[in-house]
Length: 499
Image (cartoon, rainbow, N blue to C red; front, side, top):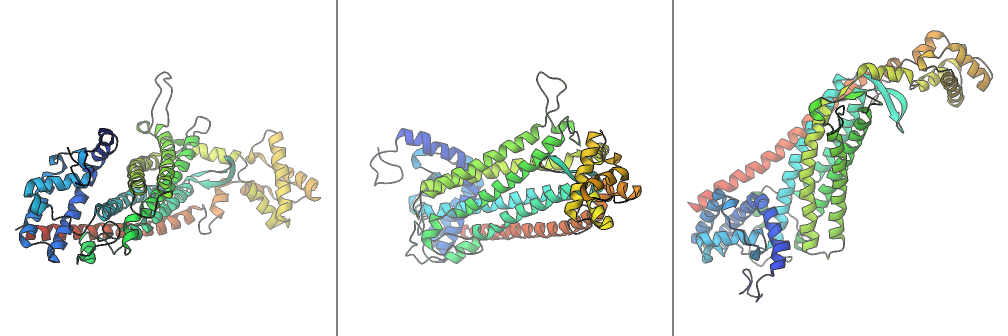
């Protein structure tokens, strides 16, 4: 017996190699790459015919065979791990359909190296489009909530301690802004992903007079990876995408962590509908935030995929390698699949979370979150430096806590007593001024600067963000349209060649 793919190899592939490398890879990848492989092969045949590198009769036979394979689909291809990979199995099926002479000419002037690199780039750009679309949906729901809940006052937290009054709408506006940066990182990767390595061959190009530009444009690429060695050696676009997806996962995990605290019995300021939760097998009272836990756990998995992919490539030579290319990209595809699932769940979380407005207002009224506003009042009306005011208010808060009072129980007399002890004089602030400074709604309303939590500031921010979102959506549609137009032209040209 001999190798099914090379006469250089005098033995068939070892059973262990088939079982542990080629068979699992074929089972995992062939269905996923079949459409991309079909497009690549069709574009290559059209280019070979246009450049006069194959005879018209062979070109017609190849075009007809490729159209038949596309129509019959990947299920019609018998997969043989002794043929190593998706391409050799695809080519073997084509040769079965149209014969060795015509079918064997398809691989003129190329290698699996540049073909696989192009296949990865085509698959990656679809991932970028799908992830971008999913991200826009989550951002849109966050902006909808930001506007709807712009008046719902709540405690803002630092170090998980009450800090200053904000609104739930303000929080969601911040989440939306973070998501827009996630979109930007993935969108920026497009320019370095959507370029064609085709024509690079194994690593040194080809002496055949091919048309690299024609190949690139027929597949919707924006340009070329010019250096042939770099074209097959590099999957840095995959690492870039994986890094962007990992950053996105870190973001959704942090938001999930916030919600995980806020839905707890001790907080109870956020509620999810029952359909977004789970329960216990033994404790009938339980309503478990399983979606939030899933999102946090998957973020850890995403980080692991990035580390694994980067580690696989870091010690490889700057040329085509299995460990640097196949194993690196495997992490990208897994991360992409998990990201799309998690973005759907994250979208559900953002869209269905409901604030307990009354409890939020009570908490922020009682928890001294407006103490900074009282200090600001002392700076404006009593002439204290901010540091003096900080000390005075700290003493007031300590006195209120010792007396079992919440923030709304602080009086001008308590302020004067603390000021006398800390600053050497009473401040004479009115009861109305003290109470207003400690009113969380007034605190929020006063912060009207761009990016602040005042309802009108949030509304302005949401309006501007929605306009930017629509521009990003239009750019995404334009990219999809460009790829589809190139694919439609490819299919039309191939049908004409086969006729």
